[in-house]
Length: 305
Image 1 (tube, rainbow, N blue to C red):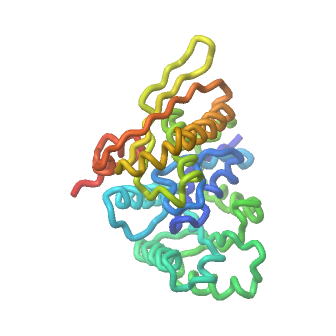
Image 2 (cartoon, rainbow, N blue to C red):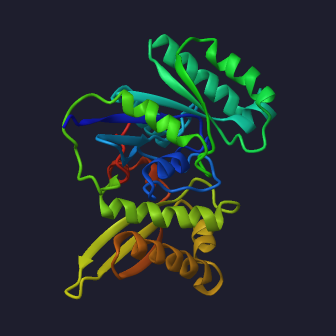
Image 3 (tube, rainbow, N blue to C red):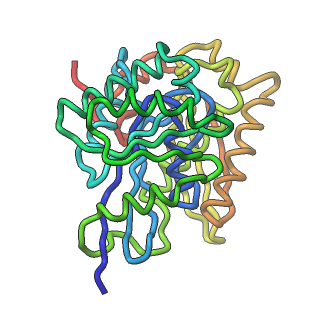
């Protein structure tokens, strides 16, 4: 039996649907999803099987013009994931680019295509969120993006519904090199449980407060205690940059943080298949985004300068 195994990087502008696509490809939740752009901060690996081929899909942060140190770390992580991959898929929000051809997403996408061209890289183009769109509206977008000559194949997909995803998986599988599998066939993700727990809580914060809280929060699983009864006790710290943000996270009478904790705990129990005792604390640390330790916790390289 000949086995294959390799890495496939999913890259794209912020909010193109990369995390949703990786979760669909893997068939299990391995990456957090929210309506807010730049939710993904690190490269998350999801493991999928296609016959005797194991594909390690790398969900990368959105690629955009970085402004802060954290932005640079996220973009660096995305390009590193693409550089190390056996196959690269550029995911594009087709509906957004068609509606706003001069918007941020379009500019970021064209910058990514140009970077692929100058780097002599080949990729597949996946047009996402095509639900309800006419093929005639998609053709000009395909032509504009394909002009650089970097795409070997074009796929029309819906990451949320799964439409077209099987064809994309088949294309990726053919590009995986021969070799032994890196993970057991039933393993869906390569991410430490502590880090996944932090990401789950961060997702719930974004889902609950995405209109009120800016990109000023992060979550750290400070303590992880295995209990004799098989359950786990997790202490997490939510870091924010201002006292006013702390008040937002806590909510009136602690109602908001209680709801966030309940949502996060429920999902952790489903994913970890065990009882979870989750305790959340909020701390103000104005410079958390400049602290090297937080980048290590998030699985990111700390950009100097």
